[in-house]
Length: 177
Length: 196
Length: 219
Image (cartoon, rainbow over all chains, first blue to last red; front, side, top):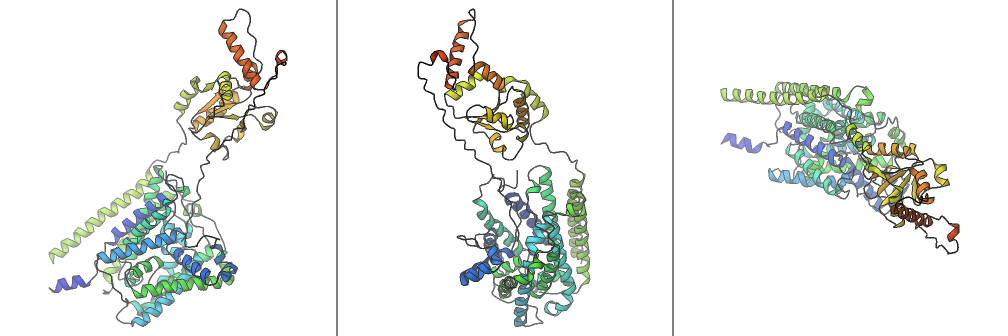
């Protein structure tokens, strides 16, 4: 009875090697069919550009960065990555639903409050968004797909992310452990 | 002969449908491997859960070996695949900022989407933070532009940079991956268990 | 205690096998013999294709097709541009021999819509062009036998057969003479009749260019 309770409380995830193997096959498949890798932060960028364009069109045109992505007559959401992101949301939802992980909550270490967790999530997102635009990629797009074709930029970005992560992990330890 | 859509073997209208299907599989695999949980993701930095390392390395090794085998059998033309441009300074500095963001927020954009999908509020806040970050970047683009465009080395691969045949690089990469798997299991047995 | 120990051992054995498989795959990629990838047909096939005279098309057949406005052929002049501008066959496209591998010539050569007829002054250059196109596996390539020199001798300026030639030679002569009139040669003895110069309509060649999509990507 005791063991069963513990088993229900702990999440049963796939074996990471199996997940990695399937992900590798998916990347091969993606490259074979479309010639490009997957990505994640590009869809966020399209979303931001669309919102800014809708709210303040003249400002968007004047700004050197937005204007690269705005073409007359075509929404910037008409992007491969946006469709892929929609697929990611559906897929993750299905996986969570099938294994009973759907729950509206804030996941945090028991040693900190949930408010602190949310504040740090916001700061983390801000920094990551900034960094992803500078480096032109995030872990899935640059690192994963970059490594699959042995691109130098992908390797450098990945090493930089995880290297800095290991260095600053000490300062954030109270949040996680 | 791949890649199929750029060579016209599959009509280009399928591109977006395939994007949704590929994203579906991607989201499913990520969530089922547990990447929707931020505490599992940062485990690699503290030594209590190495799922990120295992999934990442396995995916990279499998995909690079698979692609090069397919190139050997003339099923795919490796030179036609997209290799992203290398901006040296931007990659290092952007990567550093991303590293700090990763540790603070506990997510990366792809995994934050899976967290949003299963209802994690911190995932939604993180995604919101991403968009605000992109907004800040675009507003200050004038200042950041020289950093953004600095040192463009072009669409180079490791083969061009290191000058070694790609098969040696893949072999060395596989060895590093296998050794790091062993190392991660050893570290995990030494670190205090964390329940999450 | 023993059960978990056995379980642990089994786990490591399984992973050892998987790790060994991965290692062997990577090593195999390294050790496999790398061969030069040939684009095109093998040398033996090229030899057998070049020996057979199937590719030649005679001037009579070609004149016949032009007069009947056969839309399924494409004439390509292999000579340099100056000679092309001086005189050429109607509706011929000029691709000088040295430009035959260019990007812009490929849609004319590498397609299955039209029958391509290569010609030059004699058929030597056209033959060389044919060999190269055949090597790359292009289909429907033909060579005008004798080239433009033969064209002059047979169509534009047909040789009048002697008295002791068989009747077929006379028939051939008359068809060639009619063809030459079609192509604009005026004969003094028939100048009384108003020769309606048939205007050969400019053929619009629509070649579907196989555009290679640029690969996009990024995060």
